[in-house]
Length: 299
Image (tube, rainbow, N blue to C red; front, top):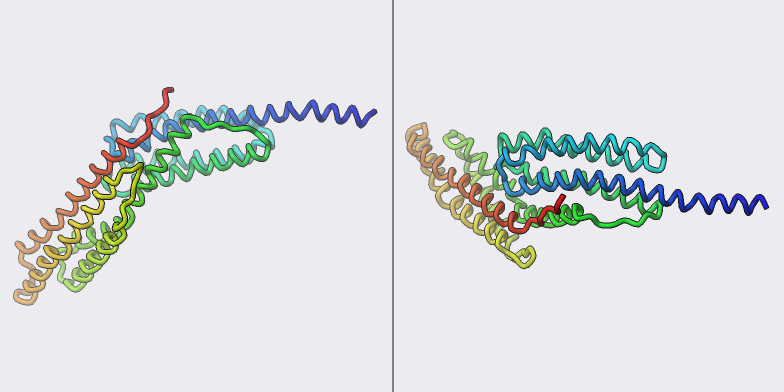
């Protein structure tokens, strides 16, 4: 008789526990959706090189929302939720930190650097770590989950980001070599400049070979073609005009033991073309991304 009573008690407790697990996960999901929605707004602005004044309110909103979410999640103090909440705290805390510090500085100081892509990558990693932990909790406690509009938007953003990231591969190597040439033009170490010019041509040639096969995004190749055009134009410049400038510098050094001001000015003017091309490419990328970004769900 006692066994039957114990079994009945256990059977009655099991649905209640399952309901509790489901309710707790829904609470976590709601709070993560709030953070995800604001982060997606920030990602939109980052990927389209938006003006700082337009994106700045989202920084404050993200931080404020997370503080409120923490108060809500602190109520989940039972052992089954402890591991999940720890993952949420660690990763959302990291997300807030890179937004409030690194990204804010990038928007204010250097919006043409590559940190925007790095931020989206890091933000995606933080949020995906939380989603993975939530999935693990759902499996462990047999909780049914659903896909939210916020999650679908975020996943679409990540697909678009992966495509733009693939288009941008190799650009860091090219940019670093261009940066070296720009900073060292006029130097008496012409051999090092020739070495950098040779490395630039090699890097550009490598990227062009990698772009032989078109890469589609939802049937579109516009961004692929923009990068291909970018690399072709830089390759032509690096293999012709830059070489001519460096050759003239070497002649100046041999003949006069110094580099003529006119030659240095010519080389700097030639290299400024790289900056202009990068700005144009950023604009093309921003337009492409803007057309393909998913619409934000109504709040």
